[in-house]
Image (cartoon, rainbow, N blue to C red; front, side, top):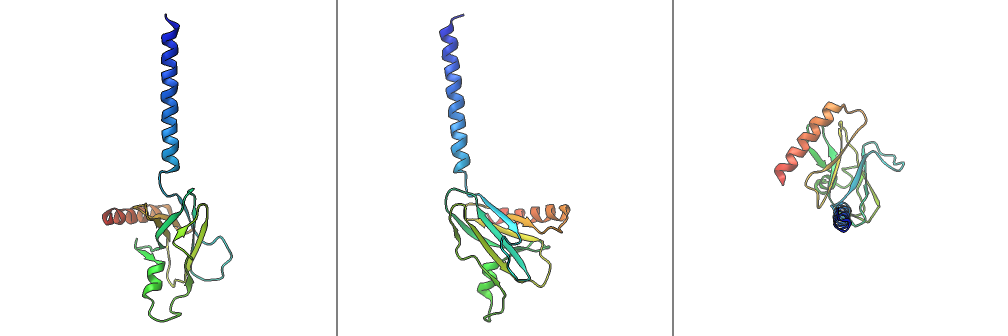
Amino acid sequence: MNLSILNEWGTFFAAFVAAGTGIITVWRQRGGDKIHLGYGSLETILSPGVDLYVINLSAHQVHLQDYGAVLFSGALDSFPAAFEVATLPGELSGYLMKSYILEPYAKALAGLEYSGQVAGVYAYTATQWRPRIAFASGVSWSTKMKLRCTVWWRAWGRR
């Protein structure tokens, strides 16, 4: 067997693997907006209601499209929309994020006072077609799956 042919094929295979891993690495780094969403607050905030936090895990700026609460009916209740339609000053008690644009590896907090029960919170960026969802600790796994499917189905229809 000729050793030079084996060496050529080995070099070709190594170059092919290196090119493939390079493409996968670039695709994973620039594959889209990555956010972490949590139910609750990262800081001590004395407000009875629903708090959420969003952390940008991307190495680039992320533009938040919408965020708010997930109700047990599967409906999404937007925090910014609730403040926009409030007719009287002081009608709603809560706080919004300072900006819709999150810098790389930054966090943002929002909260709104609710009288009823809320299953969780949601947020999605300008490049995501379905929202990220984080649930409260007392929600059962079957309710989580039902709500996740309901919210994603509605998001698919909105696409």
